[in-house]
Length: 150
Image (cartoon, rainbow, N blue to C red):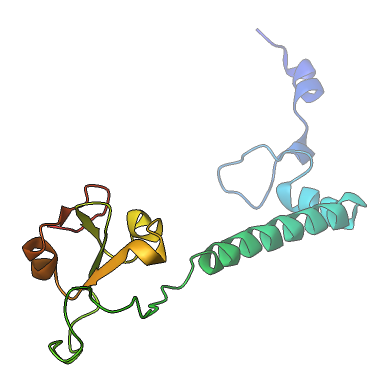
């Protein structure tokens, strides 16, 4: 058991915070004091500069991601006239650009004009059809590497 004369050695009256009713022990270096000391220190400016640079970098990355997406451009190209049909027999060009398909003289496959296979066809071998039905009537079948063909 501890003798009353030794109690003053371990516990001092000033260690208790009188503002609390529960009598909690006041810690040396209260958080408010620590914050005040940190703000007044030479490291505060360094920490603020580092945090601001991280925030600015993050905002730049976020805004840069929005600009990377390319715009979708619809380019209407004149691919030539349909072989085997005279210009007098051709219907007025009211066809949808999505219905136009192209094929090659050397193949029996048809493609949309924007497909990779259609871009490899040389201009002298290129045949343009106003519809998928026209390409099928000419004996052409859809290319397997062109998405969306039936």
